[in-house]
Image (cartoon, rainbow, N blue to C red; front, side, top):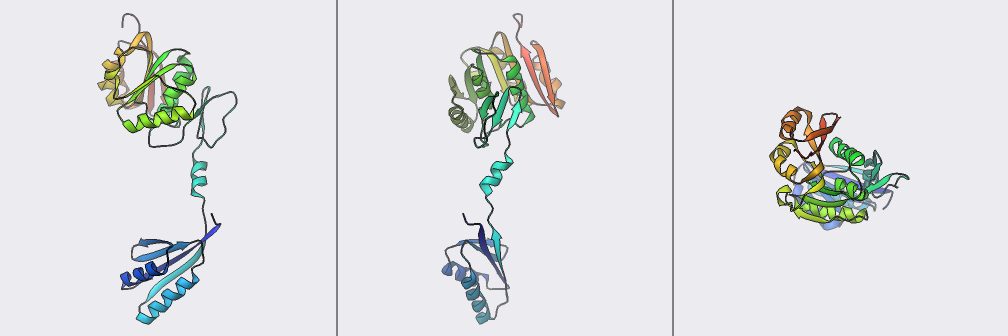
Length: 272
C-alpha cells in the first residue's frame, strides 16, 4: 500500500450526470458519489483528469467546484487491530490472535466476530471468573447460548468435557472455528436450547438475558447433576430479584456484581 493517495472532488452547479459520465469514461479508479459531488481516489496523480474536467466545465460554461488533495493512506486493518485489546480474568488471558500470549496464564484466543463474547463485557468476564474459581478438571459442562464459545473454551482449557448449544446457527459455526483456533475440542453441539439436552451435567452455564433465564429456568435445573453447579449471567441488576425467585430451590453460593450486571452461581443439593 502506498503511503499517500490522491483525492479529486468535483461538484458542478448543474448537469451533474454529464460530469459523472465524463469521469466514468476517463478513469477506472474508485469513484464515490456524495450529495451532488463526485469523488475520485487513486494512488496515482490525478492532474490530467483534473485538467480535463476543468476544460469540460469551461466549454459548457458550467461552474464546477474542484478540490484536489494529497492524503496519507491509513492502514485501517492495523488501526482496527490496535483498538481490540486483550483482557485478563483470574488465571485466564483472552486475546485476539495478533497479540502474544501471556506466560503463566491460561490462553484463550477470540477474534472479534458477529457472535457476542470477547471477554470485555462484564457478563462474560464474570462468567470466566466463576469458571476459574468453581469449575474443575474432568467435569461435564453445558454452555447454553454459547455465542462466540468463549465460556465453553474456558471450561475446555480447564480439562472439562464440554457440550454447546445456541438457537443461532451462526454462533454454533463461530464457536466451532474458535475451538479449532484454541486447539481444544467440544463433545457435542446442537442448534436449540436446554430442552434438547439428553443428559445431566456437573456444570451448566447460561449467559443470556434475564427474560430468557426466567423462561428456561426449569429446563436449566433439569440439566444439573446432583450437587451440580449453575452459572447464570446477562442479568441487569434491576431484574435480579425476578430471576432469583425462579432459582430459590437452589443454593446460592456466590453473586458477582459488575457495574449494572449480575452473575450468580448456584449449587443443586440433593433435596433440590
